[in-house]
Length: 152
Image (tube, rainbow, N blue to C red; front, side):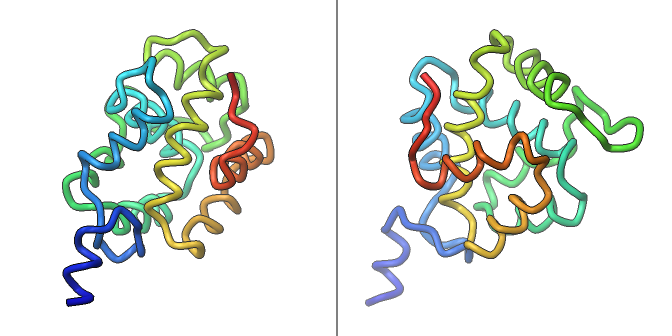
């Protein structure tokens, strides 16, 4: 009986139980009612693929529900280039361009998608992500967990 309870709950253990693409996108939409949830998630995941190692991106894929994993595949719009170093302005502009949004809205979008993504990860994986993010993005990642410092 406890197994059935796990399958119906919206909590996430990082083991593939308890959520799907629809509920993930609903969580993003709840955070970002003025944006299309799927496009916002794609834009942020594309940006993350520029910042995180291939190994960590594979680990993130494994913690997401199967029907959501494709969103973390290599971004066709922004092939990895150069030395892997992306500065803050370029990152924000890349996400804004991917989403066709104003750059000043990017932090709000990041916060909303990060909050939904963090709910999908084990604490250990969330810590690995934070460790690989640049310092200028770590605060947004941490704030998304706590539900604080939500940009307006």
